Length: 100
Image (cartoon, rainbow, N blue to C red):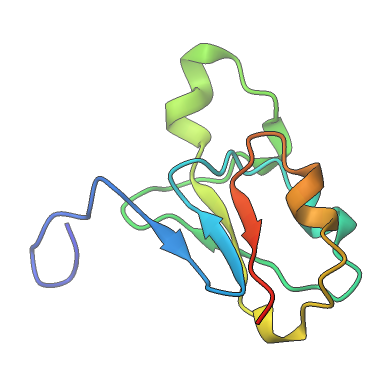
């Protein structure tokens, strides 16, 4: 529940427009952080969740839902140089680059 007592959304949707990350697909392996030459991404803790599992990838099935909480948020997407490193490196194709 959030501060107003409303339940958190079950679908997280797409974050960003130039660098669009599907939070429902993101598995928080951190490869986008590692390959981005301009540091577009920051970790975002999934609302309503606790803990961080990005250092446990790949996760055993029994821990996957518990720790798959952090998401790669494209907070500096305007700095993107369209090298496509994050999009091509993402193991679950959660990132789509949309040049203006």
